[in-house]
Image 1 (cartoon, one colour):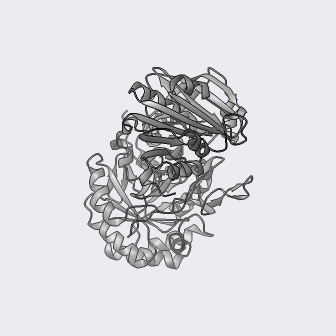
Image 2 (image 1 turned 90 degrees about the vertical axis):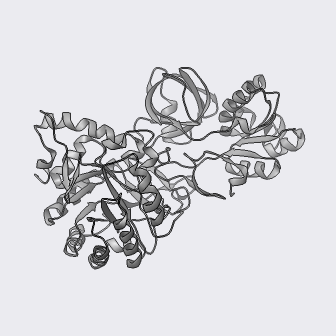
Image 3 (image 1 turned 45 degrees about the vertical axis):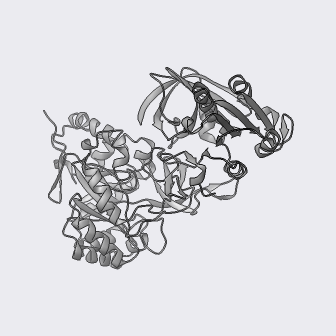
Amino acid sequence: MIKTHYTIVENTPIAPKTFKLVLSGEGVVEGEFVNIGIPGYYLRRPLSVCDKEEGQFTVIYKVVGEGTKVLSEMPAGASLEVLTGLGRGFDPDACQEEALLVGGGLGVPPLFLLAKELKARGKKVTAVLGFNRADEIILASEFRNLCDEVMVSTVDGSVGVKGFVTDALKVLKPTYDYFYTCGPMVMMKAVCAALKKRGEASLEERMGCGAGFCYGCSIQTKKGPRRVCKDGPVFKKEELIW
Amino acid sequence: MVKDLSVDLCGIRLQNPVVPASGTFGFGLELADSMDLNVLGGISLKGTTREARYGNPTPRIAECDGGMINSVGLQNPGIDALVNEKVPALRNSYNGCVIANISGFSLDEYQECCAKADACEGIDIVEVNISCPNVHNGGMAFGTDPASAAEVTKAVKEVCRKPVFIKLSPNVTDIVAIARACEDAGADGLTLVNTFLGMRIDIARRKPVIANEMGGYSGRAIFPVALRMVYQVAHACVIPVMGCGGVASARDVIEMMMAGATAVQVGAENLRNPFACPEIIAELPALMQELGIDTLQEIIGTV
């Protein structure tokens, strides 16, 4: 873990209350998520890395409270203090040949970086992305440019399969040997139950330190207590107790 | 002139007075990859009980203005894992003052854990937590009544030859009465204060933010109250005090020491800035220069 300053390159809405934040700084950002300090707010905001390259990375966040609202109002050029090198992320090498990515809402962005890593390893990648409504759809074209197959579902049926990602999975019947999922806990629980093969899920929990030493985000797993921020946020399906 | 940051805590020389507070720095090892632990004056380890505990359900954390509420509920691997695994492992990367923090639900449990901490070579000081607000039927119950606080102190002192610090709760009417009771019962020192019992409500869900409803409030906002309590206790007792509560800067450290603290614990600030302690330590010499202080030890209790 290191603490460093990044400069806002872009902080723009891409869907209702949903913002794309591009930060520039030195090197390639490490870790599954970053913990961003927001001026005037006591705790940092842990956000998954959606994309990264040398000197720059992207996170996508939703305004859910006052802290993220202040973040959304910060202009390009402003500086943010960020902790990086946090979390144990997806394991792209767990997949043999065909990966299935199942994302819901704000769980979609971290799967994008994973999709890039899987494609870099030459895997076939199928993505099923679920949203509530058409206007909440994010990153669908980016996934289409990258993945072998992409299916979108919306709860109101305005785009793609009507219903949840599990409904889309029934329609698509994807071939895969390993799955990766990120989204609301109820969605991931349903996905882990519906998909019979091996896979892993990226959990969300309210965090304190974000670096494994306050034990604020612990969960019970089949292997005993685990910290979502440090031992996860990604856990193997077989470890999870829903 | 080279500044002397060292302090004497019950005959133990701390290279500086800055100590991460229990529960805000894990077992030290979690941060060994991120910083040089050896700059720290001491480390107070995560609160430990006889048996391993998972702790409370999540959410365990709620943000507040100027601080946060936690209700971790003493998640820990148990005293045997502490003395057999955590402390020996920490000793591979830390040679400063190691403070074991012990919690219990009965006098027996306090005694058994403190005896094991006493027998563990890597532990220098035993800090006895009688002030955890996050567990039922124990913790804070021992720390809100002078007679119970004295009883725990006496029981622990029977089995522990290492310096025993009793960690006090601020959730009391008269903290000086509790402090005096601990001192009279043989405590070697006092740590104060633990967190303030607090609560937040999610007004959209109409439910408490914390799964356990309430938790311990700490952070910068409690500093003036903690400082007042340190001042009162340090002036009423002879034994040394580790001041704790809202400390977030080198200035806060100096203020706590002037109020009477021999060492100063940094708590919630570590959660927002894991590098708070090394940064504070690095800032102390320049601040001492500014204030005309050559040796930190000499400012203890000067107000």
